[in-house]
Image 1 (cartoon, rainbow, N blue to C red):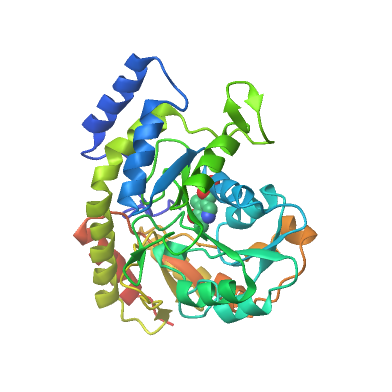
Image 2 (cartoon, rainbow, N blue to C red):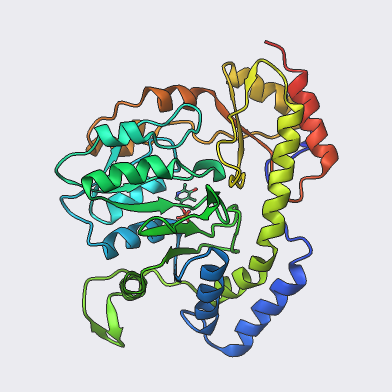
Length: 366
Ligand SMILES: *Cc1c(COP(=O)(O)O)cnc(C)c1O
């Protein structure tokens, strides 16, 4: 038996009309003879900070490092607890661990699918130093609720914005109301490099300066290490590629929002629950739906030639790697991970492909 050919892939990473700009950016770096932490990185930092509405950006190696370095620069580490969401890429929690601190999981809000501020409040202990909300799928977390908890307990807030480039919370750019925001430029992200990359944005010049020092081994001047940093440098090629792509991010984000609105208008199957858009600043990194019979749904979609993926199949605290941390009580995340499944959505998704996905969803019967 041969499988149905794939008609609608989950994502499309092949370069589109930005190819010539990226070729030119790469050629510029090759000609310069400077490959790590140079003028392209500095220029990208300034351009990215401006685009995200932040005072400063520090380029680092990955989104994971961006979270870890933001926490380290805030003085958070061994013996400290950081409250985060059980429903995310495991890297959110692994970054807390990398900083030397301990992740503590607070359950998610069943509508927003991001951390529930009441659960976060209940998870605070005398060791808690920060909250790391995750703007999951591109939807801003309930930052009002989170900042209320943080203010009550004198906690820092670092936002995991790795899926949420250009998203806004009540019209305010992400990171603006917190100590810092962490971004990933992994190739599948809304702003992707052609390799790994990440950044921290902040309005605090001293914090940005400390992150720049920490990413470079803690050096202040060459070979003089003021503190124990890490090696998390952004390279010139990725910075130049990101500079070539950044001017297209707003249009790509608008395309994601249009496609999501189109899905919302067309998906009326009662077997599926489409999570509500809780903030118009949602940037749709992914388009998840909830289906009780998920295995059968994915097989049905695959038979129609449509690829779907699960974000995420296991709550982070249920991963074997999480056994070293305190057990988590997160019944909402437990349920969501058994039902959630993402439909194809990327800026160049053709309208007829979206119509095919919608038709296949409509043909799924309970
Ligand atoms: C991608 C991602 C990360 C990690 O980013 P990397 O660049 O892969 O290290 C962290 N958190 C979330 C929510 C992500 O989607």
